[in-house]
Image (cartoon, rainbow, N blue to C red; front, side):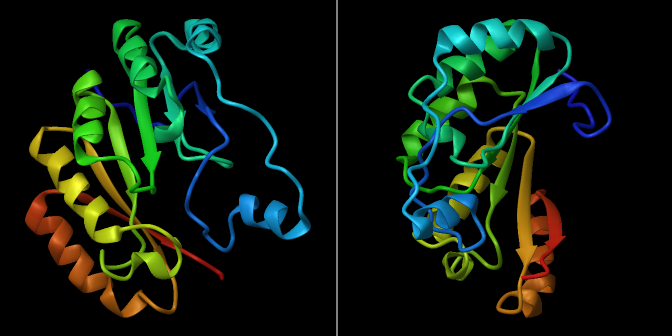
Length: 188
C-alpha cells in the first residue's frame, strides 16, 4: 500500500478510547484530573468503527488520541485488520509502553502497511521526564522492532529544554536505524 501524506488528503483522526497510563503535564487528561472531572467518553466498539470506516475507504484513518493512547482499545488489533481489508491507510500515534512487546508484534502483523509514530521525547532514557510513566527504553526497542519488520516508522521527538541538547544524538540514532525523526518544537 502506498503510504499517503496524511495531512494533504481526505481522512480522519479518531480517538478510540479513554485510557492512557501516561501523565504528560500538558495533556488534556491532566487538566481534567486536576479539576476532579472524570475523563469523558468510552471505548469505540468494533461495530462502531466498522460503520465509520466505510466512509474512509481509499483514504486514511489516524489513530491519535487526545484522551487516550489507541493501543488500549480492546478492539484495536481488529481495527487495524479491518483497515487493511478495506484499503484504508493507517497512522498510529503511540507513546504508552504498557503493553508487552509480543502484543506490539501482533499489532504490527495485523497491518504491515500501517505507519507508527512513536512519541519518545528525547533520548529513550530521558523521555519519561515529560511522558510520566513511560518506559522510553522499552518503547524505543519496540520502535526498532517495528522498523525491522518493515513497518513505516517515525520517531516523534517534542523538543523541550531538558532534551534540546540531544537532538543531534537522536538524529544519529534515527539515521543509523533508518527511522524518520520528526522534531516538534514545544513552547512549554
